[in-house]
Amino acid sequence: MIKNKHAKLFVGFFLFLMQHSFAQNDLSQLPPLLVSQNGKSISTKEQWEKTRRPEIKDMFELQMYGKVPGKLKIASVKILEMDNQALNGKAIRKQVRLTFKGNGKELAVEMLMYLPKGKKSFVTFLGYNFNGNHSTISDTSVHIAKAWNGPSKPRSAESARWPIETIIQSGCGVATMYYWDIAPDRNDFTIGVYPLLYKQNQLKPADDEWGALAAWAWGLSRGLDYLETDKNLDAKKVIVIGHSRLGKASLWAGALDQRFAGVISNCSGSGGAAISRGKEGETITKLNANFPMWACGNFKKYSNNESALPFDQHMLLAMIAPRPLYVASASEDLWADPKSEYLSAFYASDVYKLYGLKGIETNVFPKVEDPIIGQVSYHIRNGKHDILLYDWNNYIQFAHQLIK
Ligand code: GCU
Image 1: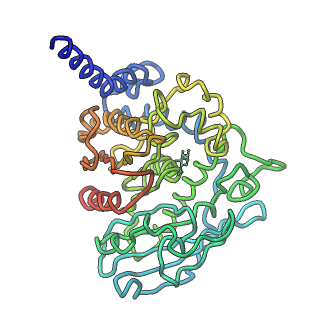
Image 2: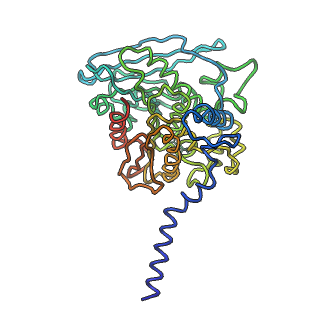
Image 3: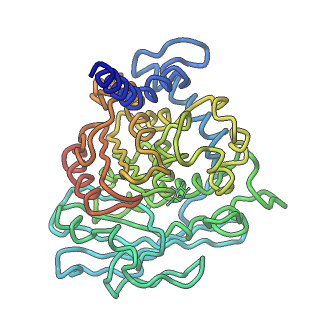
């Protein structure tokens, strides 16, 4: 009887430790978010903006994602197609080609947009798709994208990830581009945007110059440059969104480019929202080994050496403050590690507090499908690594509630 009680207590204590230990361990190991490099503590939003945020930006730029090696603006815009009666008359559809020029080379990127009709000011979600614009919807007017990696995917192959009708019905717009158009998702720096900015005889980016995540992030900002010129929407209300590797890119884009009104990371995991220290599933070592082209060359020195990182991913999320931020996970996505994603949002919340805003208030992991929607939002969906209607429904609510 007593033994039994002890056993129960022991198991209970063990479970408690499981729930809380990671948070407590990590808190002490994380580089301090609110202490500047000269050792001064940061206690106001002015100090944050003037001193700490730029320090953090520089660290991520030089050590992790890599810097953009030059300026490259949109050279020309061509409206390829527009229809005011799309989706049974509910939406405006637009397909636009953005062309970039550099070193005698050209890069063309197509953006597909669906915008709600009869509204003046609404939120537009901007994000990449994995398989070409035509893969997001069955609409046969959408151009079939050039496939960069094998045969073209069928129309609407990725449509479960893009509930476009629901988004339009909610009164929001959506704009998407194919990420390979900007930079290839393989260890190849001969195509995509890179060669347009090479110096003479350069064959690949230097160790502190962009990897693919930074190139994709750059492309999202150029997408926003275009949206700022488009009279059919309000570019002050653009939320940058991405799933998985494209969520990593959307976070870096949103962190750097403060024109984005809000930022959503869906299952972005390692190198995205998740704190690297103590991370389960995909570690920095694995990320660098399997996807050497994503981060910059300098980041390789942190393989098997996470504790040497002068920053961690909660600082990336903090760079988004005070703008609304949404981090989401999926219960079976242990590779991304939901707990490390959640804790990152929790720690980043300290910077939101400097602005008098409420972030994530507890490090106790929330229940599955019990979303926290606020300036810093989080949910964990039931199921696999993916972005699905459940996620979008919450993002739509977040957009309506927080982007004014
Ligand atoms: C791999 C990779 C992840 C990435 C994911 C995806 O699983 O290890 O880091 O997020 O692909 O982009 O789907």
